[in-house]
Image (cartoon, rainbow, N blue to C red):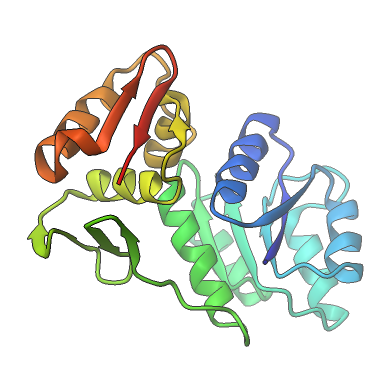
Length: 220
């Protein structure tokens, strides 16, 4: 099981990242200080670092520089609001493996995390997901029901993938908003209900059960 260090000083965002990554099978540790992040990333056995640039103590560039000077090659994804080309170039030249700007969508960050971990020896490749007669392939972004291909939009695909990762488990609207639309979602939106309706029409209404007052449950 991969361990991920999250260096982020915005509590709402760090909580969002931690919940989303844990839901996808990762073990996470959150730190809000750059100096602490540099020490932990160098001394402890983490598989990947998600690094904000605007950290107190030491900024992200300093953290990254400290790690690389010490020979620490932990895969690092910079996650920052700085979208200037010079910052991107500086981050990559100092040894970052990827650079993601805020606002972002969780499914994109998750794909980048998995891509970096796949580059490390011994990390398993993503596999085809099966739940009853529903088959979902994360690599090809294809879905089939009863052996017949089903065309899904990007949001529909991500929502179905989230449900299939938690078969039989009740997922709240808040959880689905966070996983599919990202941390900048509008909690009052009915977009989850709308997309559940889309999925029901495409994969079968009986597979997505409404749990009154709680959310939805995928029953393969």
